Image 1: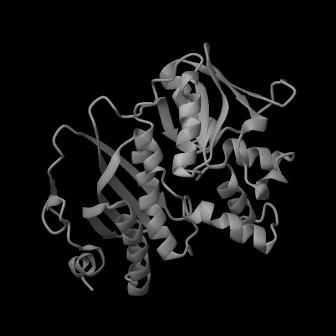
Image 2 (image 1 turned 45 degrees about the vertical axis):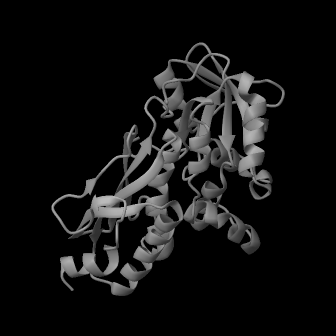
Image 3 (image 1 turned 120 degrees about the vertical axis):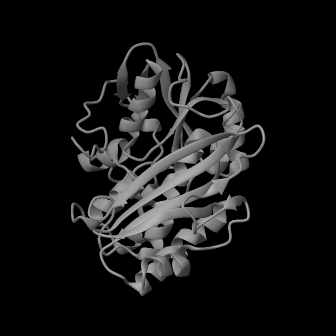
Length: 317
C-alpha cells in the first residue's frame, strides 16, 4: 500500500467544519467570529511514552486525548487536529485499530482530522490540535495570585501506579490493576471543566508530567509559591493503601499521565467551584494555597514540611 493509499483508507474523513481537509498541501480552516485560535502539539514516542506492544486502539485514542487535554487546560473548545505518524512497517490490522481509536475520541469531542503526514521509521505519533477560545478568556499558567486556592480535578497517581505494576516495581492484584489501568491507557480530557473555568480560574494547567512538576510551571510563570496539604490530595481507594510508602507518595506527587486539571482561583469562588463539581459530576478538590515567594512546600497532616525526592518526569534530566 502506498503512503497516499494508507492516508486515504485510514485517515481521510469528511471535515464539514473545515474549508479544506486532508488531501492538499495544507488544510484551510475558518475560525469562528470573535474567537482566538489555541494551538498545541504533543508527541508520543514508542518506548518512551508507551510500550511497543500497546493496544493500537487505546494508543490512537490516547494520542488525541493528551492533545485535547491541552485545550481543556486553556479553556478552549477543541476543533481540528493534524496527525504525523512514523511507522516501522505497513500493518493494516494495526492501522485499522489505531485509526478507530483515534476517531472514536475525535467523534466524542467533535474534533476533525484535517491533515498530517506519514513516513517510515520508528513508531512515533505527533498530533497538533487547534481550538477556539473567546478573546481574553484563555486559561493561562501565569495568572496565579496570592491567597488563591489550588484545586485539582479527579484523582492523582492511578496511572503511575498502573505503570509501576507493568514495569514490575510492585505487584497489584488483578482486580486493582483492571480498575486503575484506564487512567493510564484511556485518560479523559476535562474540556467541560476548562470551559466552565474561563471566568473563575486565575491559572490552570493539565497534569502530564507529575503534579508537583506541573504545579511548578504555574508558580514559575506566575512568580509565586505554594503550600500543598498532602492529606488533601485526592487519591483513589486503590492507591490509598500505598500512600504511606515512598512509591505511593511518588505516584501521587510526581506520577505522570494524569491529565486532570490543576487550577487556582480566588477563595471567594470556593462555593461556586463546589457547585461546578456537582454540576459536572466531577470531583474537584481544594488542596492548598498560593502564597508569596518561590517554590512549593508539601505539608504533612501535622503541618511539617515533607521531604520530596521527585517532582515529575523530565525527558532530559
